[in-house]
Length: 271
Image 1 (cartoon, rainbow, N blue to C red):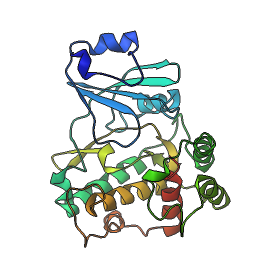
Image 2: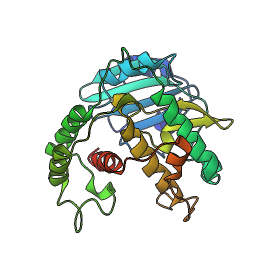
Image 3: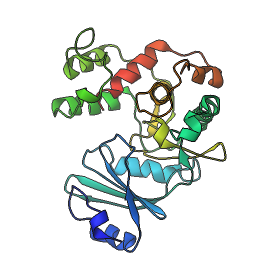
Image 4: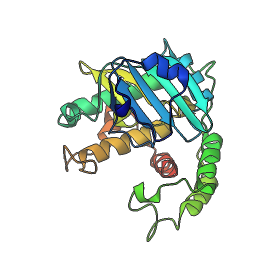
């Protein structure tokens, strides 16, 4: 491997991971928005993240999911100070934000509904992590207190005129309006780049740092928002101005709970 191609802002890699990936070609990810550094190798994916949510609990969930969902195999997980390094197997398929899918909204919507149904069909008995409103609000509170919220990356209507005065005000509203809990297995960040497809079927899920037993409307909210923004020009590429992201719920055969969709969409503004 060309050491110049694998430059982490966090410094040198842990010795065990450096040994495992020696000699492999790598390419840095340019799609994700999580703040992590991600490198794609021939058969591995390497992720380094400074924020604490990608922790041992998340890794335990990934290992628990093996045989239950198509997810990466954990090869090695190490911590160095406040940096966590996760080496995983590479899941086949292409992101559902690929232009092949965004140019075919009906096919894309069917894939996203398939992904949600796969997650919600997992038997959660024995799942080692709960990501309910209490857990999520605790994480959100940590981020607000430590000034980790990126308000510049939020929806235009969330903060400022007509919205919340700031992250503290939004957190207070979320705490005062927390919804009832409808537990399912939740991905935690079900946006299009984290759902892979192959031969027009879902082939895998990636970026599972927030996964665990959670509310079904969290995944639905983030998936709907990602679908909308991948087709309204927010991320460039394909623009379908007449497409209604609520087609996702038509495909699922369920009535959208607008209050819960709003709550979980607003909650994500603090992550």
